[in-house]
Length: 316
Image (tube, rainbow, N blue to C red; front, side):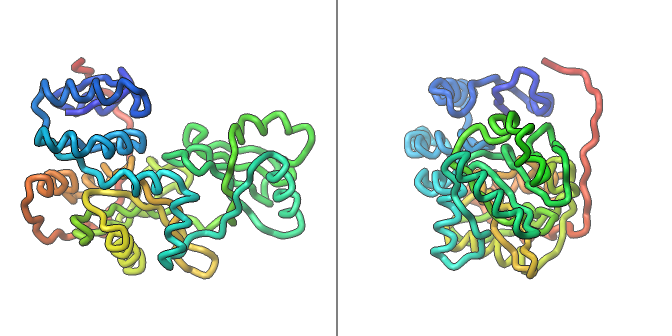
């Protein structure tokens, strides 16, 4: 059974039953969901957005009293994961590698830092601390003299001299609608998504997925074997005593050191790639909820999964 805020969500046609609900941040979200849970006798809820995860983690004890499992951990940790600045702070404290980051409070800070970049050959990345799904990312590049958009404008690339030109100041409010912003050196592509399946701080498996297009998270992935990434995922699971399924984005710096770009407080938006590659990751989440053991799985390394648009008859 699935829910979504959109009346035309593609995923609804893959559900046995579908309900439209308010977005997770809306005050009516939980009462609406609770009514569905009671009506349909749901016993496991899997949040798939940051907002849903935060709301449901706050209501976890209440739902558990109704014999409903919620596939997320405590709200205090999820709040940290939902803010990249806070995530980087706690990762540094625990000795894990994250990009060097500067917090920019306003447009003046931003302009000064960008003008400093003119004195070097650095490309930098700007992103809001609390957006999800790659939204709001702006890559400032020395080799561009224009603005490029990717993935329905989730990620934008623009030239350093272009963004500093007076005639382009009008786009600043669109590209940087709110502060603070995070500024960091651009890391080496591609981006890797790590599916982290865990129970009570112990790894069940870690699945590294290399993006086909780093700027477009849903353009496809290849399941890759990289022991450094696997060990990094296991370390994160143990450090934060994770249970259930989570997503971590990783890139490498110029020295080949893996850097945690973000940890999402829920499963990846592209986790269906792992299922399509032949690993029954959703069944394994259900198995955890039942209190059963998960057998040793063969990770389908080398499998590449690409999306394909198709037409189907809408059953709703």
